[in-house]
Amino acid sequence: MSGDLKIGIAGIGTVGEGVVDLLNKNHEHILKRTGQNLKLVGLSARDRSKKRSFKVNDYLWFDNPCDLASSKEIDVFVELIGGSDGIAKESVEVALTSGKHVVTANKALIASHGMELSKIAESNSSILNFEASVAGGIPIIKLLKESFVGNKISKIYGILNGTSNYILTQMEKTGKSFEDVLSEAQSLGYAESDPSFDINGTDTAHKLAVLTSLMTGLPPNLSSIEVEGIQSISAEDIIFSKKLGFCIKLLGIVSEQNGNYIQRVHPCMVPIKSSISRVDDVNNAIFVEGNFVGPVVLEGLGAGAGPTASSVVSDLIDVSKGKNVLPFGCKLENKEIKLDKDAARLGPWYIRFKVIDEPGVLAEIAAELKNQSVSIESVLQRGRAPGECVSLIMTTHETEEKKFKAAMQQIQKLKALAEPPCVIRIEKLLRN
Ligand SMILES: NC(=O)c1ccc[n+]([C@@H]2O[C@H](COP(=O)([O-])OP(=O)(O)OC[C@H]3O[C@@H](n4cnc5c(N)ncnc54)[C@H](OP(=O)(O)O)[C@@H]3O)[C@@H](O)[C@H]2O)c1
Image (cartoon, rainbow, N blue to C red; front, side):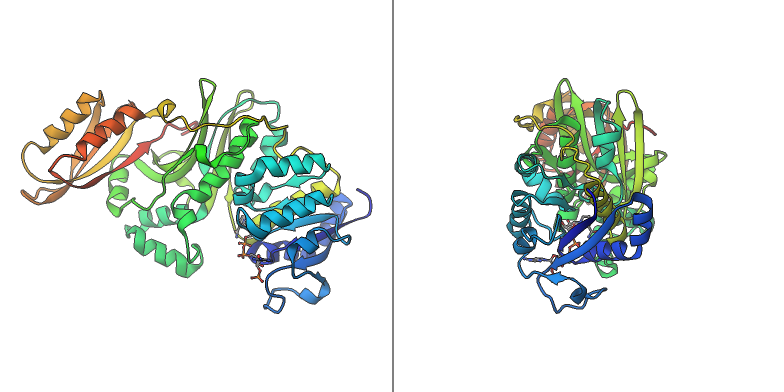
C-alpha cells in the first residue's frame, strides 16, 4: 500500500489508549523502519466526553462504531471494544463488507465467529488480523501462520490467562486462599470486577479455540473444548502439590491423537522443576511442537496496554504493507472439531478427598479405584483426627479418563466422604 494507512479505532479503553500511545510515540521509528506512515484518523467509543490519556478532539469522532467502520476516511478498522457479538461483531462485518481491512484484539469474537468473518474477509479481499487476541504481546499467531507454516503441529499448550496465573502464583507464594488472593488481585487491577471468564477457564478456551484453528485449519469451535477453571483449587492443594514435586497451572492444551484433536482447559499439576512452573504472575507462555522445528517456547506479557498494542500495531504494519495472509493461514475446512470425551486423555491424576477419619475408608476408596483398573501411585494423609474430617491425598498412575471418572462417580457415593473430591490432572510436558 503506498501513502498513508488511514486508521479508525473503535474502543479506546485499555488497549485502544495503548494503541494511540504507541502510534504517537513510535510514529517516526515505525516510518523509518518500515517506510509506512500509520495515520490515526477516526475514533469511536461510548462516551466522547470521558477523560482519556490523549486529545480526542485531534481526530474525527463517530458515535456509532459502524459509521466509522464504513467511513470513506479510513482504510483499516481496528475493533477494540470486546465481546463475541453485538456492536463488535456488527462493526467488523460492516468494515469487511465495505472493503476495509480489520485488525482486532477480540478473542471472544474470533473464537465464536472466526469462520464466517474469515469468509467475509476473503470474499471482499480484505485483510483480517487478530494477533493481539491470543497472549497479548506474544506473536504466536504470526509464528503459526508464517514462521511454522511448513510444519505439522502436533501439540500446543500454554498459560494463556494472566489473571488466573497471578492467582495461582500468589496462592503458592503466600499460602493464602483462592478467595483472598482474588480480592487482592481485584484491588491491584490484575483481575476485573467480574473475573468469571478468567477464573472459570472461558478466556483460556477462547484463545485455545483460535490456536486450534491455526494448528488444524478447522473452524474454531468452543463447544468442542472441555473447560474447567481454578475456582475449586484450595490452599491445601497448593501445599500438597508442592510436597509431591508439582505446581498448579491453568493450561489450555490441544493435541493430535490418532487423527482427532483433543482440546482441554483445566488446572494441571506440572513438575516444579519444569520451565512452565516458573512462568509466574501475569505472564503467559506457549509451547508448540512442530514436526521439523521441534519444541518451541514463547513467554511474555499476555495482556495490558503496552504488549497488546504492540501486537495490534504489528498487524497494522502488515496491512500497510499489503501483506494478505489468510486470517487462519489457510482456507478453513468446512468440518467441525467434535468434543470426543471417550478419546480423552490418558494420564495420571491427583485426588484430594475430605473423609471422616475412621478405619476402612482407605480400603473402600481403593476398592472402587481397583474396580476401574485405576492404579494408585502414592497416598498421603495429613494428621490424624479419629471421627473428624481429614484430607487424604492420592496420586494415580496413568489412567484412561473414562475409567477414572467412573471410579470417582462411585467413590462420591461413599458415606465417609465429607465433600466431593478435588481432582487435578498431572500433565506430561513437551519439555521439563
Ligand atoms: N485489556 C487487555 O489487556 C487485553 C489484552 C488482549 C486483548 N484484549 C481485548 O481487547 C479488547 C478491548 O479490551 P479493553 O481491555 O481495552 O476493554 P475496555 O478497557 O473495557 O475498553 C472498551 C472500549 O470499548 C468502548 N465501547 C464499549 N461499548 C461500546 C459501544 N457500544 N460503542 C462504542 N464503543 C464502545 C468503550 O467506550 P468508553 O471508553 O467510552 O466506555 C471503551 O473505550 C477486548 O476484545 C479484549 O478481550 C484486551
